[in-house]
Image (cartoon, rainbow, N blue to C red; front, side, top):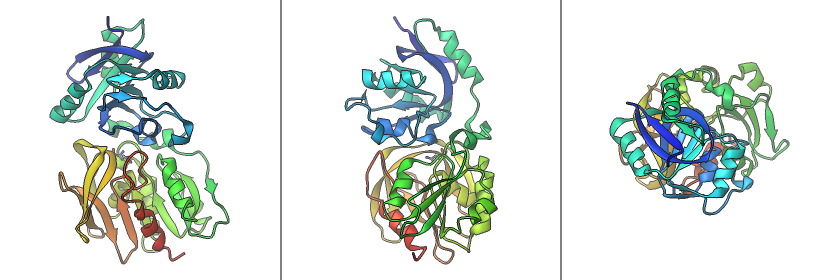
Length: 348
Ligand SMILES: NC(=O)CC[C@H](N)C(=O)O
């Protein structure tokens, strides 16, 4: 008998097996990645979302902290066809509800056909279908999480590789993955990680060679202060951005973002560089996109599946942004060269 329920928009309830108890709600999203569950579950971009793994077995190589992208689990709940005890126990210890023994293909098909949707999850011996429905009915639209940055950002500046030989990077933490800091430090950069609402004066104190806007959860329009930093620094220092970072940079420089039907979600998203015609495979998890890059940014890379902008650049103003995740983790390492390119803009 079922002891867990997933309620989808329209009040459809799917029965499941409880793997970690509790109730939760969030935007229902998926990843088609076949590895990298530790990285995805600790990626702050999944804050306020419920993550469904479409690959049927999750947890087959254990759980190791070295692979975490942050210090906690961010999705509100996890859904899989079959989840190992290692993962279930980890999620339970984090207080994150988890369910399995349901048809995840059905969930992904529903999202693909109906578009991004809210959901409610209830798991454990004492829950009912109604608990999952109650969670669903309390669920907010992603864009209505107006202060989501506060949930995922550092409280105070954190610095890495101080006294290093390379560029000084001001990384605005809108929910940054650890691998972005690592990728910069590996290239000798000194990285100062700033809260998402850092002021111009805070950032000026480190005299950065590069302003870098990180990935992060929710609607880029809810990261106004990061946009103001972009407006302040554009033309003075090079700018870089990843995922939400690309969206924030575009919005700040006269462009526009919009919600996608169900986003790009997996580690095999093909991206074509319009300058070289080369196609690379990329890691993606985003539900918003740049609808209009504005006058200052050129679209230099596009998604092969739907032509949406994957890379924006301005050679004169020294700006490079990516909609996908060059830092990988999980996923292919094809585009790690992005970090060399953005650091090269600093001349350090
Ligand atoms: N991975 C990310 O940075 C996600 C960006 C943004 N929250 C989106 O869903 O589009």
